[in-house]
Amino acid sequence: MPKKTFQNHFIKTLKRLGGFLIAGLFVLAVIFAFSRPSLSPGTETKDLKADNEVLGSNSGDTFPADNDGNVNVSVGEGVKADSYLVYDETSGKVLSSRNPNTAVAIASITKLMTAYITQKYGNLEDTWAINSASTSSIHPVLGLVPGDKVIIKDLVDAMLIGSANDSAAALGAYVSSIKKQPVIDVMNNEAKALGMNSTHYENPIGFDSEQNYSTASDLKLLLNAVRPLSLFSEIDRKQSYSFVSQTGKTYSVKATNTLLASDPDIHAIKTGFTDEAKGAMITAIHHDDKKFIIIVLGSTDREDDTKLLKKHILEEILQ
Image (tube, rainbow, N blue to C red; front, side, top):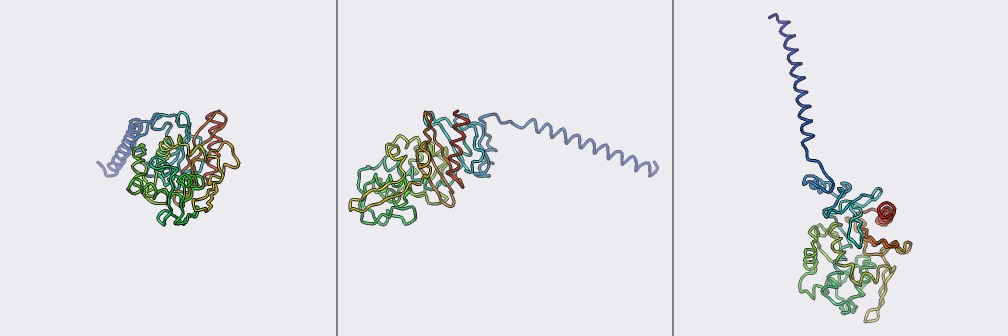
């Protein structure tokens, strides 16, 4: 065969092979696409869950249903929070959420557990003698003075309304003295008993720590335990709190939930803020016959997020 003819034949053969190769790759791509498992509502694959955990709290809204099968409509457009959960207070039905199972720093939301174990194991009418181990100088604080004697309920109310860090420290020391073990062990044991499997406490105050975290879903479990307690229903509209110790010293705090003054539907539960956790806020909304809870975590504007979620829920979900 002449050299030129051979070259032409060789080139044509390569072109045919190239065409076959491209066609083969296309067929393989189609087969792969149709063979992948699809997501149906309420289904979360292991791979997608792992991706969500790697991406962290900015990975977007949750899938169309939560693990309990509740309808989970996302109305969070414009909400800045890394994680949030809104649910009906009576039925427990989830109304909307974003990353409710992602563990994040929770700042002073930690104090809800401190209040819970105080009422469970202590006596709100007890008197506690303040010592250096039950104080804190990091604001907000009451300014508790070592040697003073204070009623436990006053410490709890000041901690929940004004997020007083020294109140939380004092209550931690109080519970530890009753249980004869470190307060964080008591807190973590209670979290486990409540099914809060993605929660760990490192201190009773909520200071930043890699070992102090929770999820919105876990906090819902804690709220189910603490909301029936009278110590919450009696103070959820108070914008300040003051009391007099047994030695005659007056202490006072202002409410950390600044929405109380402008919105009668707001019933404060707890707020929190640290550099790592950013803004956190748990609020009950009582609007006519509608009652629901808003949990906001990891927000650059917790108040605005709470107002926006309230508006969306009332106008788009519960209208």
